Amino acid sequence: MGKMKKRFSFVLATLMSLSLVLSACGGSKDSAEGGSGSADSKPVELIWYTIGTPQKDVDKVMAEVSKYTKEKINATIKMKMIDWGDYAQKMQVNVASGEPMDIIFTSAGGFDYVQNARKGAFYKLDDLIEKYGQDLKKTIDPAFLSGSKVDGHNYGIPANKELPQQEVWRFNKNLLDKYKLDISNVRSLDSLEPLLKTIKEKENGVTPFSMDKQYVPYVPYDYIIQNLPMAVKLDTKDYKIVNILETPEMKEALTTMHKYYKAGYVSAEAATTGSTNDLTTSGKWFLDRAQTQPLADNAWSQSYGYPVVSTPASDAIITNTSVQGSIMAISANSEHPEKAMEFLNLLNTDPVLRNMVDSGIEGEHYKKVNDKHIENLPASKSYDMPSYSLGNNMLLYLNQNDPDNKWDEFKKFNAAGKNSPILSFNFDSSKVSSELAAVQNVKEQFWAALMTGTLDPATNLDKAIAKFKEAGLDKVISEAQSQLDAWKANGGK
Image: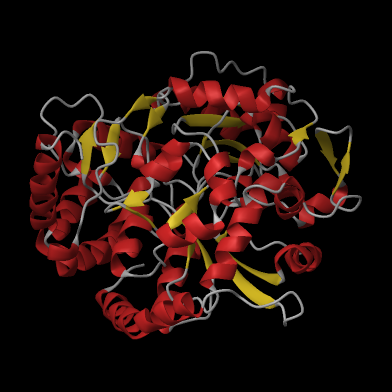
């Protein structure tokens, strides 16, 4: 498992709509043409856009992947990685401009899956799954395939991984041990302060609280659209959608974040930082927050090359974000949708391919310890991939310290998760698309700076709330509330 992290404008939205109208015939034509050719035909090159810090050896590994996929399905793979903080914006531009692509990483929080499916960015996969995806249907937890449907249709193949979303505080264990710091009572944002203070005073050159511009303080709400200020409280009785910026929980969290920022615990560039990969590579960090899964500490430690430990920051909640947390869609503009589905079927069912995509080349990036376990080699630093975004995790080799029953532990974790009150509710924003685009623009002005503590909420929170209202947030919330009420009245369907 890798680093589990993660601009929209009216102009781009307009361009995207135009490009998708023009591209609609392309998908139909390819589907009608049927198969992708005989075994001796020229291999199809599939272009795969995915999230994560671009890796030095990605082309080298994809060359080896392509040898394998050419033999299996007569296709080669070209992977293009876009860094965490830039992914959503650059993919909006790519889709709007008609950039050639076949496979696209999408999620609730990264290049929004539901919204882009409804806009026509992704190919409808129902028929392709039936024709080319029977193997993956037997492999992936049915909850992922059903939970990732949009208006009754599948537009992507979700990764088979942890089902609930649980936030944890992660710590560089070397620094915990050095200063004999106790994390047994750490849970809330405020509880971090004594530890952060120690590191700030005693460790020059270390970032006490590491974060990028995607960071949002945890509050016990489920967002209608990830990272926009519309949410429902997890213990709701009335299913009321609120502006998260007006809640006492978020106001308190933002005040604490600004205090941490002023104390120097947070990087001065946090609000504009696209990735903290340099910190995890160097070990020059003490604390961050991440989404976890069973035995995550082992995976992080193996990936970074030094010990990482974590402690819960939230309960394990099954949300739309977690069910739709990692999906591979086929572009509506793909020239090879059937071949792309063949590849996704293979990726999610073939351990050889899945492990090569995840860990690189055996003998260069990793070595096998036994039939189930591997050890990273020094060259793995040049191919350190976010496992969660690359397909069926339960096909992966185990890290050295993982027990043989790791994937059984995943199944237990999945079964124990609690459902969000709005699980499976997907907001249709088509009636308020112009307002939502304006809200997105306001978000770009205020969101990251507020969430990272860069802006003082005492003088900026009311300004941000007013700007969101001017952009039409209340109208968006009203439309979402109307749909949520109808969804609830229909038994949550």
